[in-house]
Image (cartoon, rainbow, N blue to C red):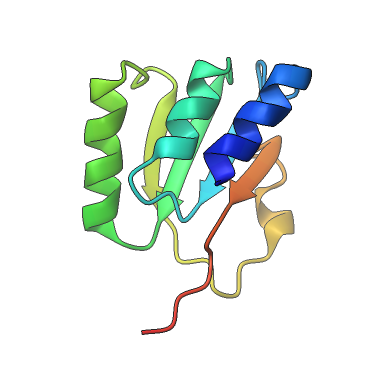
Length: 100
């Protein structure tokens, strides 16, 4: 759903062009891949699960976005977003809650 929304936004504006994007809870990295394809200058896909990050990294390679797409482990449960204002222009995320 997030990627569909980002695609809709991209069709009507150039908001992602030349921007640095921070994705919280990237999963397989689909939204980050889409954002890179939309012209973002840098995409940082984050997740707390290192196995998930490895999958996202493989997907970046398969989609030829490794030059702009990076992954990073990030545990953000009590994250202060102001600490990241100099890192990213836009922060995206979906399905960010998890209860085992």
